[in-house]
Image (cartoon, rainbow, N blue to C red; front, top):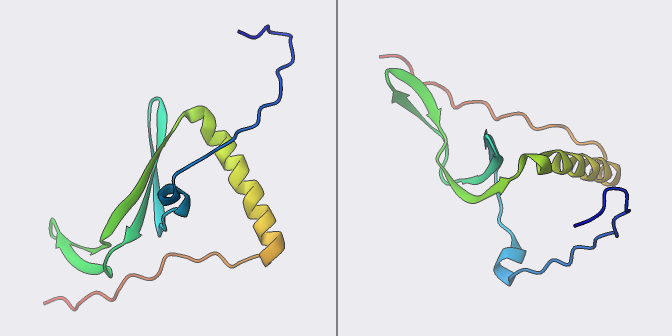
Length: 114
């Protein structure tokens, strides 16, 4: 156990992984939700084009997707992740130039009412 006033030695993380995990996965979007003691990030890919369908008497656009990864994170880590994402985005924008944000594509046209 460390003493309260004693400076801690710097840490260096030496991370290793399997080739399958190192290759990574592609995701079209991420869903973020939380429970009392953790945040969950569900990364997903579209599996088919969106389709208009009726749910409980209301027309909705259904976007078929498959989850490719679920990451569970302690709440304390979320702040560090947000800072890291902001730093990397700032660096990326300096290298690539500011990019236009892509808005959600428009919903497919609604079929005429019968």
